[in-house]
Amino acid sequence: MGGAIKVFHSFKLLKDMLFKENELPDRTDEVKKILRSMSMDYEKIHACSNDCILYRKEYEHLKKCSVSGRSRYKKNDKSPAKVLWYFPIMPRFKCMFKNAEHAKSLTCYSDGMIIDSMLRHPADSLQ
Image (cartoon, rainbow, N blue to C red):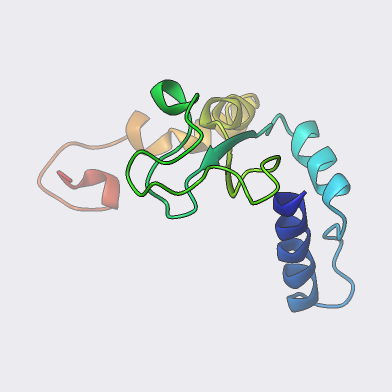
């Protein structure tokens, strides 16, 4: 619930910062519904309150941080001390490239790039 409250406050703050007639949702469940409709599901990953580790893969079973020794959970031992909301990138890429016109504009620099010594766009640089 703590994570949901933080998300709610973040969206409420953003909504208050924008102009009065904005359409940004102010309730967490509305935000989640919009994200899911755009194939932008998220994954909640427990994290150390000191930002040492993420409790996943080999650390998934731990109750305390192996670096700082802090507890994974709050005092009531039910809710995690800190939660990371991870938005996987592949569903977003699939959504971006679903429309052929959008895909063409997203790849225009690599498809039509002229290879010479001139720097016309940041994509032309070596880095």
